[in-house]
Amino acid sequence: MAPPKKKKKEISFGEKMLMLKKAGMERSKPVSTRSRSDVDALDSIEDRVAKILDIVYSKQSGLHMIYFVMYDIEDNKVRKEIAKYLEKKGLVRIQKSIFFGNTSRDVFNQVHQDLKEVNSVYENVDSIVLVPVSTDEIKAMKLIGSNIDFDIVMQNKNTLFF
Image 1 (cartoon, rainbow, N blue to C red):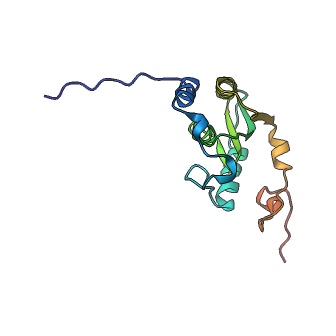
Image 2: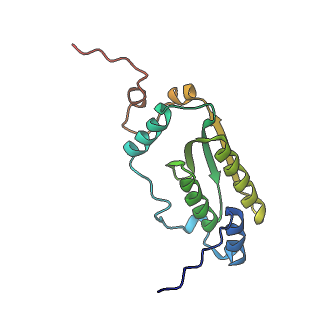
């Protein structure tokens, strides 16, 4: 019989980022020389819009909130870890540095606290913005720069067929 496996100690996201800093975060490549990784890869615009629609039209309880998380993070390793963290928390990546979520207020507060902790771990000029929005504001959103008519997708226009 095999010996029982040791359970890994859960560490917080902030602790993980502190370990990353101690491992030599300052040696990562600058933003201008970064290559595209799996974390930087985006789904197709159709898939991203479909995910947004799922969030917008899902039944909401008063304990949930819709919000964006946007960041400008210089360090590649930190940026990559934050992107993975946000996806694990259930947020949808809609652009390289913009995530969209519909989570409980507790998760929103935890994300805020964890990102605040990460930002304080190392010297930086990074910025992270969390923006709560209402469903009505999301439905009024317009998309520029793609061949998708976001108004029709969001069912904001009436269409008459003859």
